[in-house]
Amino acid sequence: MKFAWIDIRNVRAEHRESVIDAAIHARVDAVVDSDAATLATLPNTVKRVLAGAPRPAEQPLDDVIVLHEVADSGRLGELHALHRNGQKDTAGLVNVVDDPSLTLACDTAIALPYTVVEFKDPTKIPLEIVIAAADSSPGQLICRADDLEEAQVIVDVLEKGSEGVLLSPRDANDVFALVEMLQVKTPALQLSTLTVESIEHLGLGDRVCIDTCTHFEKDEGMLIGSYAHGFILCVSETHPLPYMPTRPFRINAGALHSYVFGQDNRTNYLSELKAGSAVLAVGADGRTRRIVVGRIKLESRPLLSIKARSAEGVEVNLIVQDDWHVRVLGPGAAVLNVTELKQGDQVLGHVATDKRHVGWPVGEFCVEK
Image (cartoon, rainbow, N blue to C red; front, side, top):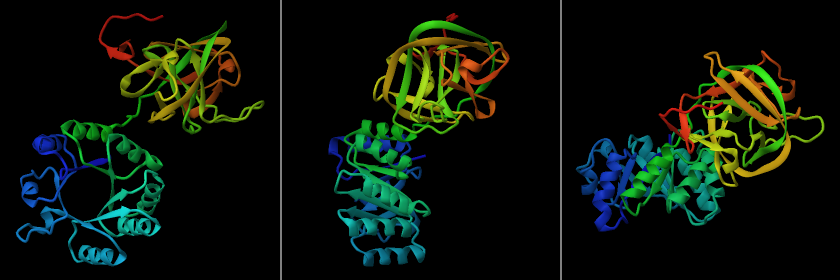
């Protein structure tokens, strides 16, 4: 999980106390300050990082991380020697402004237990390079963000981002927002094996293709269904087709009315999706990840209704385009053409116990059929 370092050096006086309280209660990884006395008041649940000031003689070596500016390879050599000689809590700060300082940042990330990097330019290419250089290093890489929006970009760089984000918050709300952002995960889902009961040709209707901003794996898709309590795993167009090129960013999802299962146990109608919407990619093993919609394509096509049932007796329905190249996933990530499904075939899906109101789960009586 990503972690937060909160820099309180530039926090306005009227917000300083509340920011410190927020940092403690939100369980940030570290608080950064130039005042050793302030850091000494912090509980042991948060790391103390002393920046821009010498380590107090009375402060134990294992009680504070000292953040040193690293301006050249000579200074890095001195800090690396301190680290090798037992000063484990040594951190380096590198300001990346050009190619030599970028190389220095890479070397620092490899040599020291903590490396904070900040960048003069808005491009994230230098951060990608430092992340790659530090990938096999046991040290932790922390990148400074100017605001919460930049923090989100940093987290997503190279799909892994730096281990930590350093932020100087405006107030306590920024602290809680950063911690929440870094904790966002998409937990695995329990997939069920559903047995097909019937296939029905419905005639013309509107269906939606979801074109995303990512490349799907061969065993990934999206959970789509007519009912909020049950979904079938529709596979992407990653697999070869005889008459058209693969489109590994696309899922021919289903009819306009259908639900798509998303983050935080919420559903959306396919009709609600648009460029920039967040959706959930789901693997045949139940793993999930957040991805972004690039566009949707709504077109009139012949439709096919698939009715299936779980082992517990829950009925699931999926209405998709009635065409051979539309596919769902079966057990073992088997790729199944929807027009070739027949009674008794098995498909992968997800059965939810919640009813829905505007996509959110609610505990109320509701019948869907």
